Amino acid sequence: MRKNTVDIVTLGCSKNLVDSERLMKQLEEAGFKVTHDALHPQGSIAVINTCGFIGDAKEESVNTILEFAQAKEEGRLERLYVMGCLSERYMQELALEIPQVDRYYGKFDWPQLLADLGKDYREDLHVGRVLTTPRHYAYLKISEGCDRSCSYCAIPIMTGHHVSRPMDEIVAEVSSLVAQGVKEFQVIAQELTYYGMDLYKRQALPDLVERIADLPGVEWIRLHYAYPANFPFGLLPVMRERPNVCKYLDIALQHISNHMLQLMRRHTTKEETYRLIERLRQEVPGIHLRTTLMVGHPGETEEDFAELKDFVRSVRFERMGAFAYSHEEGTYAARHYEDNVPSEVKQARLDELMDLQRGISAEQNEAKVGQRLRTIIDRKEGEYYVGRTQYDSPEVDPEVLIEAGERRLRTGRFYDVEITGSDDYDLYGKLV
Image (cartoon, rainbow, N blue to C red):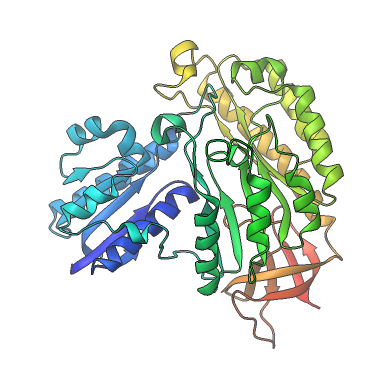
């Protein structure tokens, strides 16, 4: 056990990761040594940043807390603190169930956490971060919270209303990160397309992306978590015309049948969704769309699911993930609907949908064989260098594997790569 060392453990999404990175900066400037996601506790203090989105994420968070609580009981840890989404949502219940934790905090209770460690929270560090990603890319959170009212989603319960960050502050953060060697930015939010409505009374995402794209040293900008209703179409010329804005959009559509979209309170229709996808592909040639779909929401019939499969076959998303509905306390669905799709049916539908997408992904990858793609190198792994193209976000999308031959490649550098082979989810290439 190392005195004055704090282990930060981050669970859940990249937005949580940004929160951990900001907390790490506060702790480092306060004089602590900080580690991130250590396999075993190294320091005398641990802070777990939890996720509470769906059942599986909550279970992982609780199990992690229990593991660290056991380490504390065995004398391998002096103090244990828990923060983040799960703690925001279930603070009192967790305190009763796992009393070994010294204190539970809400999602943004960092000043109190610093105070309990005998330190002051520094407002002047509010955009400072200790990057936990490879130094050439970073996640850039442009807002917090969500004003949507989707039936199944507990995020607004945990994060509150949508709050946009000022544009000048975001641009200053990007400039600071570029100075540290960051070249690629994954722009994230609970809901990107609402950015600016509170501060500027308009959808300001196109302006923000243009300002970031204008900064010297910004090589790639990739956009995550757009919402389909009231999409800001002014973004499309920016994506089409700016070479450092990736032809990539992560837009969670959830379902396609009008019956399910209405039950989910998505404020869009099947017809509008098809028109949106057509316009995205028409105005930004070559765009790769990533979406997330849900199966097993209360009321989903076999006909609804068949319609969803037809949608996937028809649209042929370049990237797709899916998950099974989880009945979450406090949500509209939990208050008004019976969780009436059996768990085994949910799992069967999920497996069938992902199997369908697996074939589509394999065909999409095979179509890239012979193309030359600009590729950034993330790491060396065994006999391969592992990189990504503009169409690939870290952690979730295909990677490009390049045999480690005579030439040594540098992490964080761009190379022109000819794609020579593919499988279901990855590409193989050689340097041009």
